Length: 140
Image 1: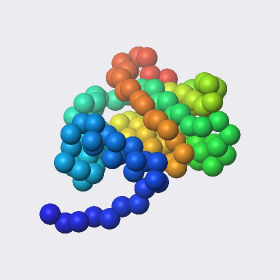
Image 2: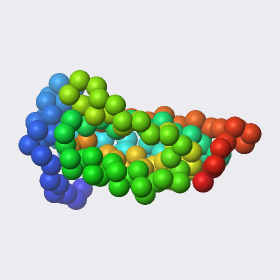
Image 3: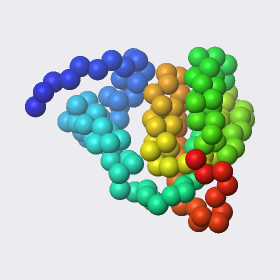
Image 4: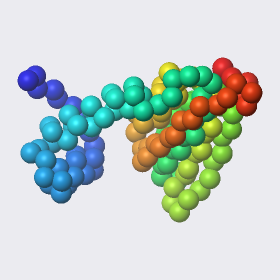
């Protein structure tokens, strides 16, 4: 099996080690392999494929993290045609962005994956549902 070298912040590495110990994994590699498999399968089998689709996506990050705010603003502009709604709220010491997208599965997957790749983002959660043609508004 090839060896792959990756970079990650110290805090994430500590969380990875704690998770591996707590759940009795043989080591970091096993956790990373399982996470990679899960991510690759995420948009393959569990989601509807007919269009139009709606997605509700939440992005949580530390309040005052200007780099994430800048990235989320860029995401908002990039997917403007697919965004049906966007709300920014404060929850404790965090900012929460709520997006409703009306688009195809490929765009939803790209949006979620881009948001997950931003340094400083704590969580990105989403749900996808099929819309009947009559209920779709401005489908992209």
